[in-house]
Length: 329
Image (cartoon, rainbow, N blue to C red; front, side, top):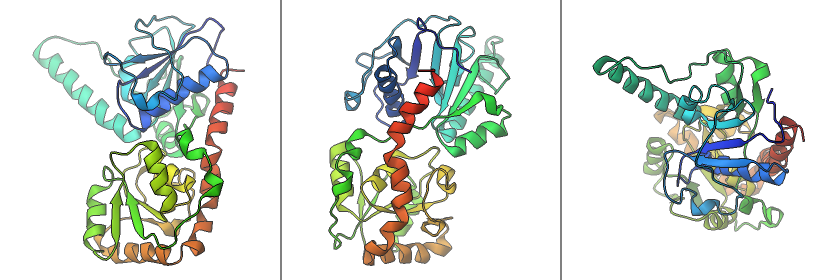
């Protein structure tokens, strides 16, 4: 697959200043490549901005490069949101890291529409988009089982796909064995940016319950909140292995989730199926009953999440080992 040489430059493309799961994964990648001994590893931020590295990622080792050279020995690591770069660097080896299938669909549809408008109004354009053509120097990393299925549906051969999953912020991995819960804490945690309509209906139909949004908080604050809480609820799209789901289980939260995106697959969200719901208004009462059952008998439910927690807690080691395997170290 990838032909890494000691003089190869590894260039990781990343949007600037964003504090979301994708950019964090890209900075984690830089950090781990440096840690396993690779020297020529650089971040290249697009679009260009002053001070592009978000302060939240100061814990991750990275170096920035401003000029990118197209060379057969160089390796470009491209998030799925930037697949238009594939044809810009035809000589280089390229890895597309599929962190979010949904985000890819939205962005590529937008870029194709824009390209077609320019083509009609102004001049004929070279097709800049990647359409899963069988290019010999393009490889793929699937962050989730769900994204690997998506790649296979688009006829990417198994030999060009590797399974590479990021890991949760190291803050959540410290002292995770010594969590002491207050069993009378009945606050239900959720991410207000995800599954907004579903969560709004659940809140509306359970005025007796206390719902707490996780927002405008540092990683330390989120960890503290999760370590004290019993339950995290998620009905978001989950285009990849969701960070907050993994963070919550690391802090011994039970989980109630939807079956959107990667959450549908046990390989990505390793919890029993009776904690997952295909959301509809008809089963709101059933979902709320499950929530109440967990809050009333946390000790009877938390054992169902041990397998998932163990998987999450070893992700950083698995990630590092996978990188050593790929770069033959």
